[in-house]
Amino acid sequence: MTERKSELAENLARVEERISSACAAAGRRREEVALIVVTKTYPASDVRLLADLGVRHVAENRDQDAAPKAAACADLPLSWHFVGQLQTNKVRSVAGYAQVVQSVDRPKLVTALSAAAESQGREIGCLVQIALDAESGERGSRGGAAPDLLPELADLLAAAPGLRIDGLMTVAPLSGPYAGREQAAFERLMELSSGLRADHPAATMVSAGMSADLEQAVLAGATHVRVGTAVLGARPRLG
Image (tube, helix red, strand yellow):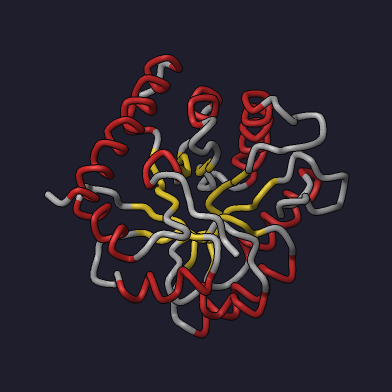
């Protein structure tokens, strides 16, 4: 085993222990929580090592990095998640490799994703990204739609050819009433998820929690956690 693979294996083991402990504390089964490894800024060689170590879900937030990486790893049994703010001019590219787009936050994006998925003969799972720091009807500073926009976006996704409404995603907010209150933020997301499932029963996915706050997300009920730094190490500064 190479030095890098050993490092990743040790990091994955530590993250696995954290998730397992959080599940136990919440009275949940470990199988209820899926790990998505956020591989942004790291090379395709790391993605290959992660796949060898049993990782099945990876995430990226920039299409210019994700597209060539996904192509280089197309032979691997991976599900690719797009988690960044998505501009409509990147939609056609993202629709070519992403199984799930977690950052749907406006009607225009639904329309563009649907057209791209249809043209490529694909079905893409979509999460509505909720911004808990956004004013009514607005988008958040880190992307995402205000909670009151959820019903409209969910209905649009459910009706859009080539798309599925799979659930919700959030990032713990840095400002507003939930700043510094990750547990409360994730519990609010679970309340929104409950309302969503009343109208769209199959939309059961709840993506919340990252390296610093995955325990709070698991305790709140998240089905997927997005972990980058704790698995891959501190990221180099960009730019």
